[in-house]
Length: 176
Image (cartoon, rainbow, N blue to C red; front, side):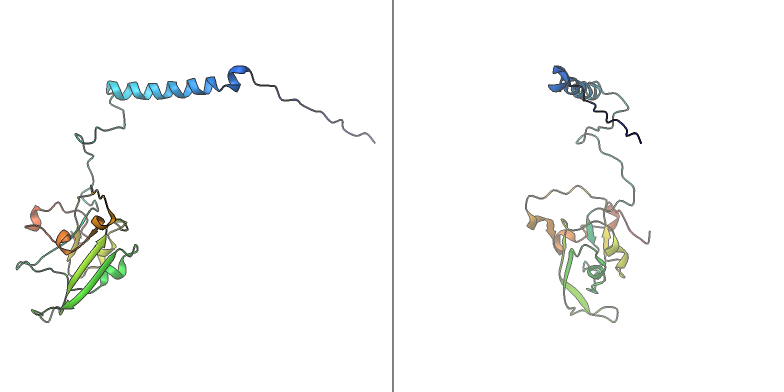
């Protein structure tokens, strides 16, 4: 019975240029310079946009910042039913209700406090879908910057509709 002979293969030693990674560094610099020159000379197929001057076009159904709509008399349409708070997967909506002194058969509560933590919000639109009175809608305004966490928690005054609804840049609304 014959046994197979064992063959030992010695790996070749890399040369000096390979050990110093010179070809890899030069290849990476070539790619970087190619992209730099394409952007500098303004070729048309470049994906980069000049942000403050140019803005991307977004869909009419873009989900941006929330708006609490008002009735004709200026009061909030929200009846503090907690549907949006219950339906929110990110648990970023907090509502504290109080009795409405001008209550009718349609509603008997109103929000004393209505807060949305925009840093926790995932802008899914489930709160807008759940609202039975269409009191909560979303605008197309999506550029928000905060310096502290407290600025990102917006209340009734920040969310309240400013002026006629036709003047708002409305985004996602499930019934339209």
